[in-house]
Every structure is written in C-alpha cells, then in structure tokens.
Length: 163
Ligand SMILES: [Zn+2]
Image 1 (cartoon, rainbow, N blue to C red):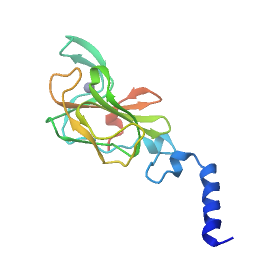
Image 2 (image 1 turned 135 degrees about the horizontal axis):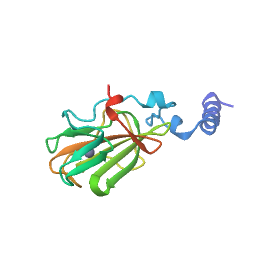
Image 3 (image 1 turned 90 degrees about the horizontal axis):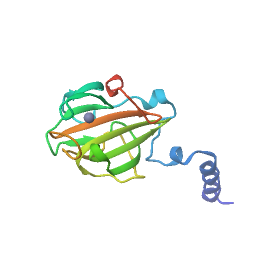
Image 4 (image 1 turned 120 degrees about the horizontal axis):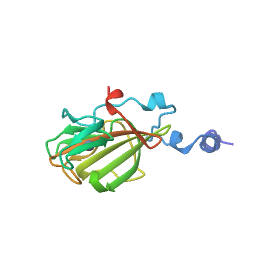
C-alpha cells in the first residue's frame, strides 16, 4: 500500500471515531461548558438594558429580559461572540431578524433585532466573524442588539461571561 493511500485509510478511520463537529476543520465546538462560556463582545455599543426583571417601556410593567441590549447605531457590525455552528438564522417573533449559534456542551448565543443577516443555518463560523448588522426589527423602539446566552435552552446573564 502506498503511503498516501495508507493515510487516507487512517483519516477515514479517525472520521468515524470522532464526532463530526470536532473533525470539521473550521467548526470549532467547545468540549466543556466552562470552555464554551467565554465570549468576546458581539458589538461595540454600551449596555442599555440589563438581564433579568426590567421595566418595559412598551408594556409599562416589569418583564423578564433574557439577554442584554447593546446600543446601536443601525447598520453597525455584529460579530459572533465565539466559534460555533449557526443553529438558526431568520425571523423570530419579537426578536425580529435573529441568529442563534451553538458553541458545544449545550451553550448557545442569540442575536436579535438585526437589520441584516450574513450567515446561514448549518454554517460553521469562527469567533469574531461578522454575522449581521444592528437594526430595529421585531419589538424594539430603537436600533439595538439583543444579545443572549443560553445554557441547555435557558437564558443566563451574558455579562457574567463577556471578556
Ligand atoms: Zn433585549
């Protein structure tokens, strides 16, 4: 057997032994929640609404806010907070144009109220890549980024994990 042929057989064996998300060269998934819960800022703007029970201007009452809102302006770039795989990209109710990225170990980030989306579901992306632009789609009074962190589908405070 020629050397390159033996290598191909070896690689095929490895591909079967490893989960596909680890084998894919540009789809870096965290192997633990501890590793997954480290994020860079998805946008430059300051926090204008925090996580948790917050007064809601529109409903004139306290409502649970499952993320933080970062100030616009409209059209400002939005970046992936870490590497992962796009799980969702499209319209999502009050969150307007929305992107959700899976980072491995049940950790995901979500980005809402976007004016444009530049990734597709199923795509592997590296942290810091542009995924869309800040907007005011969905239920919002001004251009802003709704940024959320999900652990096994439940929202946790993003400010606890931003670098
Ligand atoms: Zn929000």
